[in-house]
Amino acid sequence: MAFTLASHILLVPFGVALPAITLLMHYRGLRKGDAVALLLARRWSAVMAVQFAIGIVTGTVLSFEFGLLWPGMMGRWGDVFGLGFGIEAWAFFLEAILIAIYLYGWRRLKPWTHFWLGLPLPLTALMGAFGIVAANAWMNTPRGFTLDASGKPVNVNVRQAVFTPMFGPEYWHFVVGVVLTAGYVVAGVYAVGLLRGRRDRYHRLGFTVPFTVAAILTPVQFVLGDSIARSVFHEQPVKFAATEIVWKTGTHVPEYMFGRLHADGSISGGIKIPQLDSILAGFSPATKVTGLTSVPASDRPTATQATIAHWAFDIMVTIGSLLVLLALWYGWCRLRRRELPRSVWFFRCAALAGAACLLTVECGWITTEVGRQPWIVYQNMRVSEAVTGTRAASLWTMFGIVVVVYVLVLGSFLTVLVKMSRRWRLADEGVVPADTTAGDLEGSAPYGPRPLSASAGGDRGDE
Image (cartoon, helix red, strand yellow):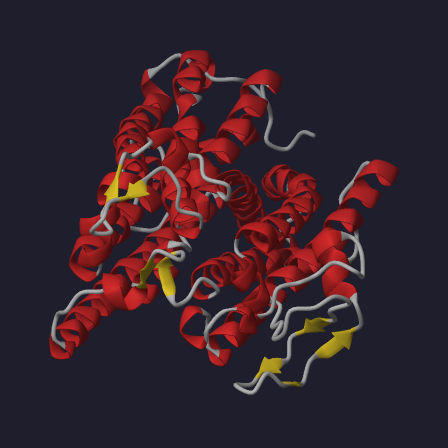
């Protein structure tokens, strides 16, 4: 399950955010009569469709795994929090239909009609995220039920089960995070092109629009990250203790940047900042922070699990801080000189920002799931009670098959993207291979260009 989620979650930012970024570029193209913007939007829509197809495979495997690997959890709690998965399924089918309409509409619909029909796409993506995050937030702060004499959930209140205390902080932190991740990844592709000397308007615009979106959202995400950490402090104090490797309850608690927690409560390595953890948790050094020893050892993460959650959290915070500096650098140049930064180091950092964001997505998931151990449903069901009783040999066989399938699927995804990029570059350069006609490079595709007379005007070489 960890391998499947860690692989699938890398596609999530593009499934949720790429439609919005594409439509933003599409709107710019129609509003300003910008042919370059329309070209970028059309090509991004093709990537969006391929990514969605890959997401179908990885997401379907996840759906089976919930039933096969976690029968104890789904059998007991499915009626309480299962609505989130139903919402996600509806959003999935709606998104599939809308992507098909949007993709084929490039040559078959009037320009503005095509745009307005694509506008619901980001909403369906957000609805899918709503369902999944609602389910995860319920696992962290379960609400909306009472337990009968045998310990089974009854009297389910759907509204309370969906809108749990952690839902709001998790949802907005997740949505902003995936949008800025997609923005930095897309911009990073064009940053590489700019570093290689391709400083035409196509690459500058392809970099500027998604990077601007990401740069605006980066400080917002930093504030949301601080907010969700404080929500964890109030709603899941033992989890907070794990992510901050706090061993004993007390005030004036120091903050450790990295470091390793040992079974006896000692901490080795890292950078110790006196009193900072209490200040961050409650804005005062006198804030009492709950320690791991406040509960029995069987009800808290192990020292190794706490260290893993702590490192994941610190990596996420460190990268987020560096991205804030990068966003401020970009904003200073744009506001002061009305142009992109000139330093080659800026574009090198921008090219790496996307990969760094994907790492933070992984770290955020690790912090959320590992920090909750040993509970799969916080303080209501342990992982050991929820997991399948299938023999170890069968699990290893299943795991091997999943690894092979994912390697093939993700490898195919990257291969298709590379081939699409090569075809587009050849089309831009006017180079036609011996076995290909000029129209086959792009125009014969379903998303291929509408005749120039029917599309917004504009000269690719003009500002």
